[in-house]
Image (tube, rainbow, N blue to C red; front, side):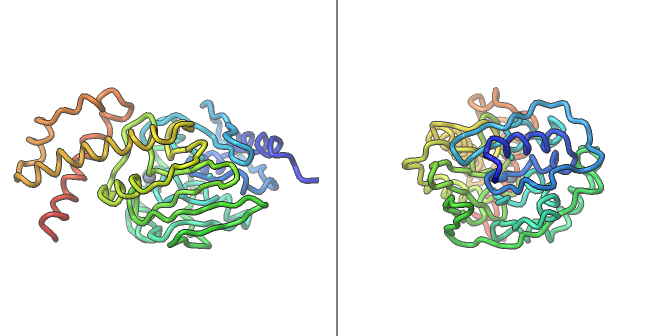
Amino acid sequence: MLPSPNTKARRITRALSMSNPFATLCQSMFLFLLLPTAALATSEPAPIDIEMLLKQVSEHVYYAQVMAGIATDNKGFISNAAAIVTHYHADHIYGLQVFEDLDAEIIAPGGFQDYLDSPAADERLEERRFSLSPWVNEDTRLVRPDRVIVEQTEMSLGGVTLDIRYLRPAHSDGDLAVLVRPDQVLISGDIIFEGRIPFTGSANTGRWLEALESLDQVGVEALIPGHGPAEREPAEAVHSTLEYLRYTRGVMAEAVDEMTPFAEAYEAADWWRFERLPAFAATHRRNAYGIYLSLEQEIFGE
Ligand SMILES: [Zn+2]
């Protein structure tokens, strides 16, 4: 007999909280309904004392919500855990080796190779084995997907239909959002950050804004963002990331247009609306600088 979803959920929670590789995979967006339930036991678990609850959002969708901090906060548990990879950023892919070892098909957006084949991927992993030790360790390895999505794709798994939306390079070098159709639950990846300052890194914020503006939320019952709690009002979650990107991009675009040096423009700008959000101190100035540089390229070319 197949285990019930609740039994699966309990087993996955146990695996997430006890085993070392599963601890790291919690940083990725995995759809629990896709998870195999066998062979969850692994050896030499690293102790974890953070709260990480598996929450049921709808009939087929569970997610492990963790604290929305910056990359090295909370022992690295900062992103919501789905074996479709929404995008290839370190905090969303560490732990994939567990799925590969279980012969699970790993599905990811086109553009993943831009990150995976760059020196930054190896350098980041090396650094995280230090800064997130022992949860990221020698067993943690970079895993390539078995299937790459580059267009709108419909997939049926275990009788559940998924609409996989390819969002092109936006937040990262390639992004996906997944709609669990029968439940109308949208898993957005890092296109949406809830309750903290988004991480924009080397994002194409122009395309990111387009992706958010074109995100069809009609009929969506719940949204699970890349970071932060599930949201029953998707429009609100979309709005807060949208507002952050629009405003920061607007301020920086004006600075670039007027050839104001970054530091001067940053100091002169009014950031009060974002100052109280978690990760502001650690993230916002760097985001603004990255956006300033990318706008220089957009406006003045290479
Ligand atoms: Zn990301």
